[in-house]
Image (cartoon, rainbow, N blue to C red; front, side, top):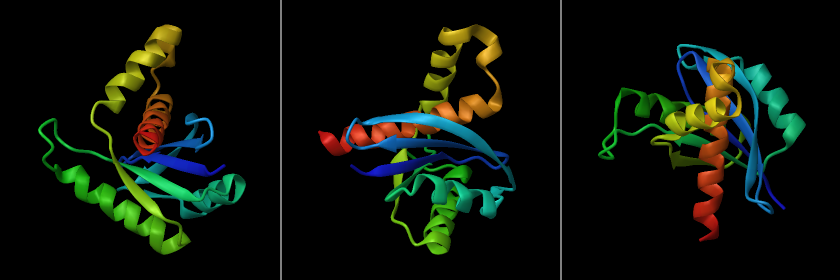
Length: 138
C-alpha cells in the first residue's frame, strides 16, 4: 500500500488531502494558508511526517482548452519547491473542474454552510488525488 498527499494549489489557500493506493480513495485534510503561494513550510513538513507519503500530487490548473494560465506556472513552482525541500517524487495532475465538482459535492452534503474556502480547497485536493489514482489503475 502506498500513501499519497494531494495539493490543490492557490496563492492564498492550498487544499490538502491524503489518499491510499490500495483503496483508491482520499480524504480531505485541513487546508494550508499561503502568502503569495508560499505556505508555512514547517506545517507542510509536519503533515509529511505525520502521513509519510511516498508521492505528492499537485493539481495543475489549466484552461478548459488545455492551455496554461498564469496560475499554472505558480503551481509548477510549488511542485518543484516540494520536491526540492523534501526529496519526494511529485506528480502533476490536471485539475480542470475539480473546484466546481468539490463545491457541488459539499453543497449536496450540507448546503451553503459547507462552502467555506478551506473545505472547498481540500475537497478539490481530494478529487485531484482520486483522479490521479484512478488514471494509474486504468
